[in-house]
Length: 452
Ligand code: GDP
Ligand code: ZN
Picture 1: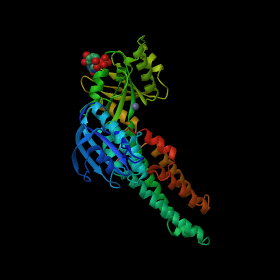
Picture 2: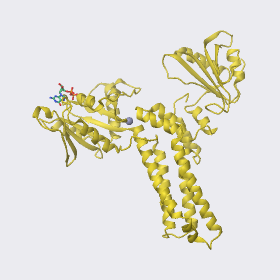
Picture 3: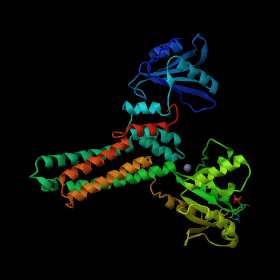
Picture 4: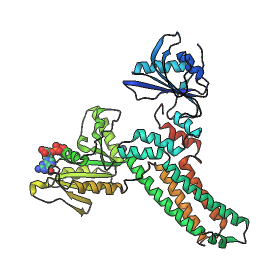
């Protein structure tokens, strides 16, 4: 059998598993025209859709569909890329993929297309991560901010900081070359003022990135309360006019104990403790163990009680099992029955909110409380970010602060000043991937899905 693909050719099904009208197989390698010809008997025109039969080795058709050819370097990966758009059934997609492997391609690893795009300079690391975050986005706000990062807004902001750092470093290097100028020279060049501006900018970007991380990961909420206190009613109210998005999680049906709603675009992952009962059922036991794992990672527990009954012994028992670090909101529901008004007040163990889910009163108090705990304050211009970006930004902030204390004369050593600026720059470089170790790249891309 003719192997026509170069040894670096990778292939994968790029569309989601299951059945669909169209399924896409993506192929990337350094020279794919012979590959396309062997597969279809045609030489596709670059960037035009070519109607073609995808042929097996004996010439019979496996499928027929559209063939797209993007010659490198003007492609997603920067290499030659072929997209085979066939019929989106699992069997026909597998047959088509098998045919690509026959022709010498190998199965792509998770994130390998994006990794090649990064290595070939088609996008930086923050952008590549934004691709994955866009696919994983749980709310429209998260998706929008992921697109913003994907288009390079986050990277540009980092780039501007970087440029300012370079300018400052050049200034210091010049001073180091002419030691007699020394600190006076830096003062004349307003190094101090520029550092201060840099610090402000860094703080602002840190904040926007922090909001982006929140949009992506959301708030994890444990919802506790006895049957009939109004948990379902409250969830429906909280969701309001927002689109309720149920996160599909692979696994047992018991995972449905976790649902995701959103408030102002922040995903709220709700773990319902209603399912946490003693059981002999094996499947249910697994689900319950998983719920407890979720609870370990939670941020806040909302205890819902009937305002006319108060917190019961059973509620206290459940609360006692929760991790201590969880913030607490106690919600007194059904105040309409007692003719009471909605209100918020502090209690010794957290915040208490009185409301009525049924009468739709006081819901806003709870929404605001949840947003406050999440730390959400910004709706505009957020770019999606990850924990590692925040750590790098925090490190850059520390180095700039250290550099500033040098200029202020606390540690008057120019070499140190230059070194702190260099370290700050290096921290920023980790975000865009300029200074990122290979093993970290491996970890980042391995979490992508296959075909991406
Ligand atoms: P869950 O079992 O905790 O999910 O409780 P549900 O949301 O199913 O509500 C149980 C019952 O309480 C239903 O009949 C609701 O209509 C009622 N209910 C829920 N919230 C309120 C409320 O604020 N006031 C009144 N009067 N009834 C409520
Ligand atoms: Zn989660």
